[in-house]
Image (cartoon, rainbow, N blue to C red; front, side, top):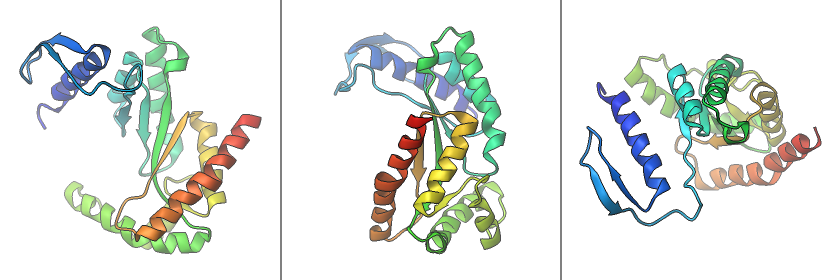
Length: 219
């Protein structure tokens, strides 16, 4: 952990070099050098997409902008408005570095679960979500997740995307007014029965995504 920043910086630099050329010559301090070796398989895309994940560190947001890489902002707690500063830092750093706005893509990543009935979504997801968050909390010193806190976190101006398809649509659009992001990723954490997980994915693809795209395309 003491070497985390140096490791991340060097590994990212190497990854970006690897996506540019089939054979590279590269030297760093954290691993053996590369002296013209080929790296396979090559990506199908002209450039392998690389997104920088940011949780709450301003320096990480600035780095993503400075490099002109898309930023995936994880919102797993609290009100979304408090993350607007990271988005501003990202875009400002990108502009200062001379990158075109078109490359400064933004994704929002959040936890969630979708069921046709809102209350059933809340009931089905509480145990899987609390098990995951409480395990992490024991490692990081967080208090246990209570049902009251969980229910509050489902509100429009909070972080959890748990509810009916329309509630998820409303929440994505609400956050889009704050961030004008390009991408939204819904992560369902915890042990969820397979049929319920598949239904949640189906609802996201058949009801949520089309409604969001329709609204944004007409605005």
